[in-house]
Length: 127
Length: 127
DNA sequence: GGTTGACCTGGAGTGCACTCCAGCTCCTAC
DNA sequence: GTAGGAGCTGGAGTGCACTCCAGGTCAACC
Image 1 (cartoon, rainbow over the protein chains, first blue to last red):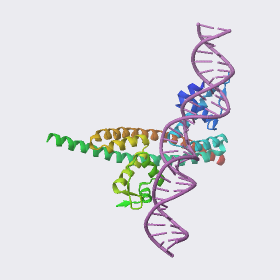
Image 2: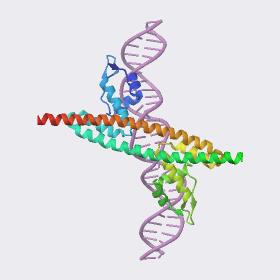
Image 3: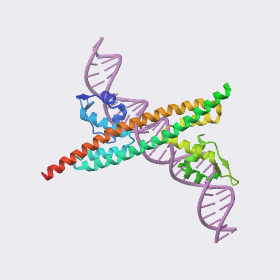
Image 4: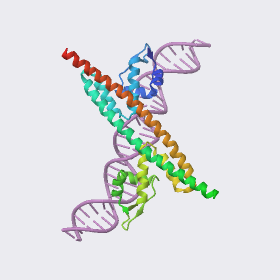
């Protein structure tokens, strides 16, 4: 299967402009072109794009994704380095989740506080 | 207790520049000044700063924090609206955590994949 | 009384990740 | 054969959240 840029955008969740931007900065390899010079994305291209969106979602900076892309480009010899990157990134995602979780606790506490105020207020009115 | 801007920065985890910036954009009330015209933060100022850093950590945009700050400024009458904001924000934080968790799963999968490659490689060598 | 260090102000600059635009080409459908 | 729509390029613009800077003040210590 091949996909137009619009289809690739829809399937990856990136915008058309972002796809071209990623190509420009070397985050994705230039896809094939059709007879009219238009980009034609393959399934492989697509799965790379989808993977990139995962990395992006987890907050990996573009510069690091690009580093990963470059290693990937150099083939199997860099697999260890790539694994290492994912390893470290996984740790940072876990930390991030823990951090969010702890802020969530504060939020819960604060909301409970507001609920208590409301409760007090209602009591005051009905008393 | 009162705190110099350097102390407030250290205790809140924000930079000195960020403290002044937050004041400029109306995210924090201008703190008291000492005899020399220097900022003198109170414990209340500090706890607001700390709370702001929680909101920031959870990804609340400054514009929303400012909205919250303005409501807070208008007193108890806005408590319901503020609670509502925290409520909605809590939902978005939960979603964010779920999203991170699901990307984490992909990461695990990918790392396992690299480990399998390594394993195969070792087998190939020792075979 | 001079130097040092923390702090002050207004304003400019930075880094990131897009996003938009003008002006063009190409294919398709009428 | 022409109108419309998708896509093309290079480059400019945007929004966010800071971060830095020059030039100045102030209090304290030597």
